[in-house]
Amino acid sequence: RHLKFTALRSRQPQESIDYQRQIMQTLQLSEDKREAYQGLQGRFQEQRTKMAMLNAQLGIASREEKRNKLTLTELDALPAGTNTYLAVGKMFVQEPCDKIIEDLATTTKETVSEIEKLTEQRKQLEASMSETEKSLKEILSTATVVSPEDAANA
Image 1: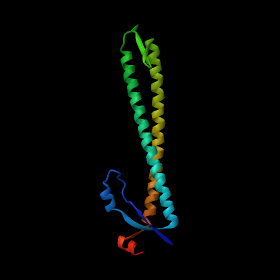
Image 2 (image 1 turned 30 degrees about the horizontal axis):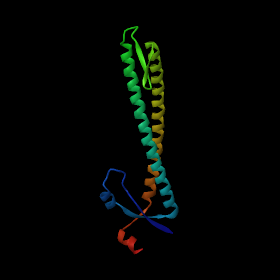
Image 3 (image 1 turned 90 degrees about the horizontal axis):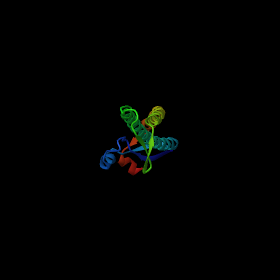
Image 4 (image 1 turned 60 degrees about the vertical axis):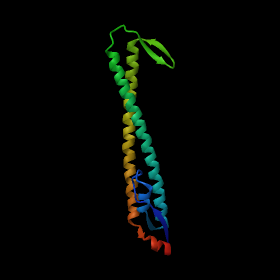
């Protein structure tokens, strides 16, 4: 027994809705393949969401690393004995320059390790996404394309 459903064969989310409607085709798949397709489609959407979150986290971490490195270079350029202050909420606390530099170096190392961890997660997710996409294409390649007129008559 075959079930009919409509699938969108477009991967670009920025395409207009009119264009997407033009490329929609009615596909005929067995029930088990239809369920597998829908499951893979949901999984791919989850993976895309995770990828967006990972990319956002990577952006934040890389900006923090750049800011810390810039601050470190500026602090290194200060002469010895310069009064330095650390922002704590709405107030500033006087701290020795060496302690601030040490804290920033530690924070920068932690940020670099976080970036490496996120990059590795992103590589794994990209591999998983490509496998899911390959499976989706495999299922769609076995589908029978039915013209809209034939689908209306069935």
